[in-house]
Image 1 (cartoon, rainbow, N blue to C red):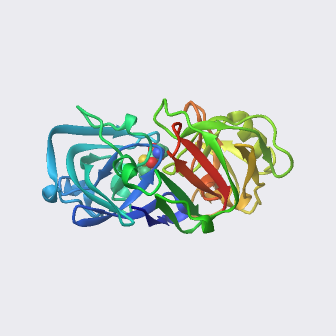
Image 2: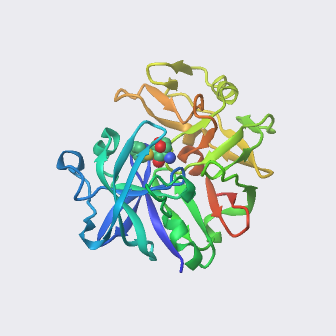
Amino acid sequence: QSGEVAANPEQYDESYLCPVQVGQTTLNLDFDTGSADLWVFSTLTPKSESTGHSLYNPSTGTKKSGYTWDISYGDGSGASGTVYADKVVVGGVTATSQAVEAATSVSSQFEQDTDNDGLLGLAFSSINTVEPQAQKTFFDSVKGSLAKPLFTADLKKGAAGTYDFGYIDSSKYTGSISYVNVNTANGFWEFTASGYAVGSGSVSGSVGDAIADTGTTLMYLPTTVVQAYYNKVDSADYDSNQGGYTYDCSENLPNFLISLGGKTFTVSGTDINFAPVDSSGETCFGGIQENTGIGMSILGDIFLKSVFVVFDQTQSTPRLGFAAQ
Ligand SMILES: N[C@H]1[C@H](O)[C@@H](Sc2ccccc2)[C@@H]2OC[C@H]1O2
């Protein structure tokens, strides 16, 4: 089988939400290549936490007795609950008995984001949080039945993009696809990014160890790289109150060039201009920030909306393919 599903952006492309049938209900889920749990708001979630969300009703599923899950994300958010086996359909691709993690508790970030009815993890199943036995991601559940064991991400700035499962749509990219091998030891789509440049010109240095994470909004890079970038932005300043680099919204940001698998990709300065810090619209928060304390770089949506990405398990070693959109 194969299929395509829309990836609809929230305001400022904070995250992208995709319609997924879970049991007999369609929920809008955040496809997250940085985690491996498929969890949903449900009729088991306290009403005080679930108002405004679409809810999965576990009555259509088979309860996995004694199974629980509890996940904490890099941004401090989290959720926990119980586990059911039920039908999940993404763009026509069907997992007949997918582990569906029904939330019995969610953190405030999820409670408040009423566009978001849960997450569909697309990292490696080794980091699924279900106890006493880790469960398969949706991709792992359907991988063997897909025309090709791969999925692609084509996210866009301020417009609906797509995730495709089982095939590569050559109309969604230009030029050739450049591949890098993935190290799955940490359960992420983790690889080594090469040289970079600010504005234009030839790349140099090394961004280094990085993950491709559709669930992270921004790009988090080594301090040296981020300082080199904002050195080219006259009004830029590290604002500890905002927790990152800010600048005058009126300023034009330089492009950021990064080399992956021998090919240089350009993230436009307009894409790096993330959002105003408040309603005055005077000061803006940058889409490139420091990876301090994370342990690796994260190429999140600010980067991913510039490229077409293949999450490829056709070889013995998983690999990532990048092409210009
Ligand atoms: N992989 C990412 C994940 O998808 C989000 S979870 C999330 C939290 C609030 C709102 C939407 C999503 C969190 O931020 C970075 C990392 O953890």
